[in-house]
Picture 1 (cartoon, rainbow, N blue to C red):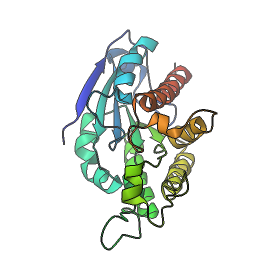
Picture 2 (cartoon, rainbow, N blue to C red):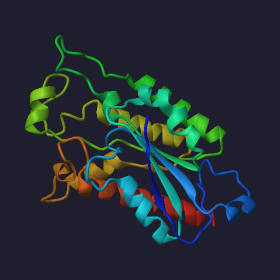
Picture 3 (tube, rainbow, N blue to C red):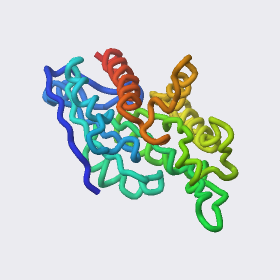
Picture 4 (cartoon, rainbow, N blue to C red):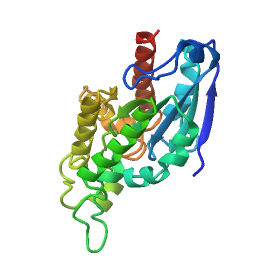
Length: 252
């Protein structure tokens, strides 16, 4: 599948990941002008019209912080981890990344209650979701590639989403009722990060915290109840940039 490449250029500062750290020696680091980061995800990662997606923000702002990078956007709309596993070799490994940011879960956890008859189980079970992610993680670690895990962003009911998904086990009368299965998948990502001692950017928790502030709503961060808008993408980018800068500083 096609991926878009975004370049950021600035004075080189050696860069590697603190956990799953790159095995390259100092000599290699000095000769490489930038590091390749693949952002691997679904439609919340993929290019979306004129939306200022977080991959663009990383490409533009990391060089200004002394971290030269090439950002490869490997986000594909509608993808779950089964689909991600099928394209992992071509869209990620063949790019020889120094680091991969991984975010899946919304499509895995979705239950297609709109079908006739309605589905009753997630598209990808939580167990299989964890297995798929773990295989990706272990492959990257075996190649001495850095990994950052991100939880999926929280969802918010809209009228259209209620019409499509407002049936059990979802609860259209509960403001958080569209996250009944998703919250479990977010917790699974946290467990994998802890197990593999990987950096975690907890987007689910960050969105939840934003929505708890007076006069703010999670919907402020979303285009359509699912996909981050400019403000939501900005929040993701800020947290990722903070993590990458921290890892860079720890390994100077």
